[in-house]
Image (cartoon, rainbow, N blue to C red):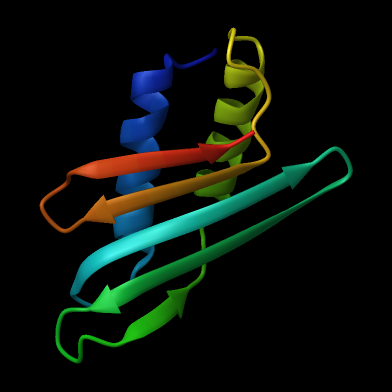
Amino acid sequence: MTLPINSIYQTIGTEIAKSIPEEWDKAWVVFEFSPDVFDIRGRYISADTKQEKSFVVSQNTITHLHNLHIQMAETPKGDWKTARFELQRNGQFELHFEY
């Protein structure tokens, strides 16, 4: 079953929030895709120390980002190569794509 794009966004945000091991202010995942390989990095700003730290991106997040890539490749905008998903502690998020 294919989820609507808005549901994929919500699921990615939920998965990111669950993956961070401490209180945080802002988190982001960068997903770089090419036909044979992908790279994914998760980072966040700690609420306590205000330092940037890394986190392990869950397999569910990777799966949903890949599904998002497939669905968006079928839209008029086409195939993106890099996506950056930024999530604020209050649940607001932004997506940035490079084509």
